[in-house]
Structures are given as C-alpha cells and as structure tokens.
Image 1 (cartoon, rainbow, N blue to C red):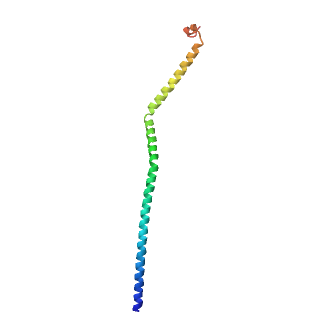
Image 2 (tube, rainbow, N blue to C red):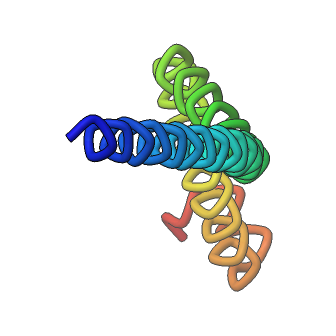
Image 3 (tube, helix red, strand yellow):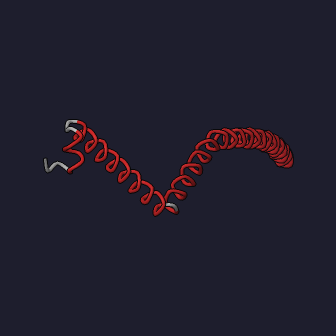
Length: 114
C-alpha cells in the first residue's frame, strides 16, 4: 500500500511539473501574441493617422473658406450687385450709342424731334 501511495505521489508530482511547464509555455505564447498585437495595433494606428491627416487638413481648409465667405456675405452681395448694375448700365449706354449712330447730326441736336 505504501508502494502505491508513493507511485501516486510520483505521478502527481510529474503531472504537476508537466502542467506547470505547459502553463509556462502558454504564458510565453500569450506574451508573444500580445506583443505582436501591440505592434500591429501601433502600425495600424500610424497608418490610419497618415491617411486621415490630409483629409482633415482639406476639410479644415474648406471650412475656413466657407466661414470667410459667410463672414463677408454682405460685401460679396454688394460687389455682385454693383457688378451687375455696371454691366447693365454699360449695355444700356452701348445700345443708346448704337441707336444714335443711325441718325444724322440735326436729329441728334434736337433730340430726335426732327
């Protein structure tokens, strides 16, 4: 009976050593996998940042341009109105001059009454 007990203790000791070794190996593998995951996550983050930076820069530029246009909307409206009025006045004057050219000097002198 003592012999059986000793065999059981030896078997239990061997099993414990084997389990401890397996646990150590598993821990090492987990550590290696975590390191690889950290490296992969770091490189993925760097890649995302590198691709997102130009997009963010472009969006910021567009927003700044839009904000400038909104702030200067009264000036832009006034400039557009003045430009349109100038074009209309020029077209009217050119039309009047072309109409005048068809009449003689006496008609122009009397304002078209004769």
